[in-house]
Image (cartoon, rainbow, N blue to C red; front, top):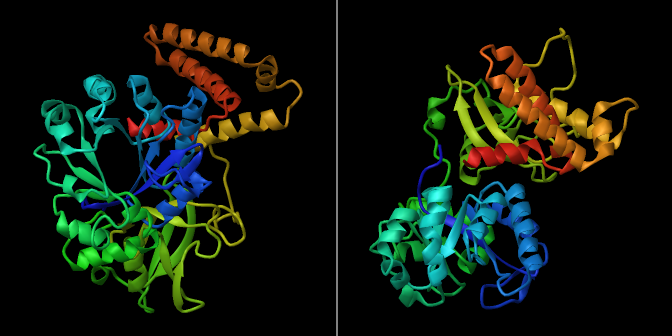
Length: 434
């Protein structure tokens, strides 16, 4: 399980499609903000805050920033919070639609204070945060903050005189610039015990030390956000070599990817880093999956079986699990009966793969290719017609007809998805955020 401790949060300041130093210094630190976000995510941060600094630019600049935020949200394995360039509810909607788990209103601007109730009631309090440059902005609007937001980000920068505990009972993350405190992020957590999280360049500039900082926090009894085992290594039943087998499964599709083994060090390392780590029996050494290939496995959940002698790991697989390049190690068919696939995700993925293949490899007489050839207007017309037929079928007492019409609607919806280059993963990710 993941506990609810204090968070180490990376931040990206997005300006002109590049990551810059901070809100006041537009010196470019990385021309590839998506790649930078992946680096932060791989470093075991608990969250990433992206600041859209396109305010004052054109609408095209703002849309370009939102596109990058969308790419970041898809690429990383942690929650993304979106901040900056919010003037109306539509801007909050765009941040959430781009994949942000949470979007923030800036309480240093009265216009943002005025819309917090509207956006909170529309999208839910848990999706709304507040940024402020001084806690007075918060206390002046205490009732609104308490009722309609779930978190506060205090933009302290280098001014530590701003940092004090808020009277409002909301978790407070403090943004510090590098060198703002006399020490590192751990020192800041010790000095300001009320902080729920720390972000800014104090984290960014020490990104390679996040795991080290988390270990130090544990040694100092500072509660931090990390995987926490409900079953200790001693409680597990090991084989004659002192190892335990681990079955690895794709958390999204439930596809079995591989089988490996853990010793105690690998078991503990997996929980510390959030990346699957094994014991290589052939090399007699620890093995971080993906260390050389980049095909990391990010832990989503770990389970022990009824006898506690086998672990099931649900992971997000980057690239291929198998050294052959196959996504799964289990591809050598021994025997198979004909059967109809019942896993909903696999069925939808399979049909969608056929539809996408028709785009690349047209087939004479294919109805799908007919729709693609006719273009978006024809596809939209068919989606509308099938939606209407589904509504009519729902008025009938027998469910057979509506099942048929829903299937027709889903097929045409998938043609539309392929036409607009939208994946099932994007749809399911959005549904899971609701």
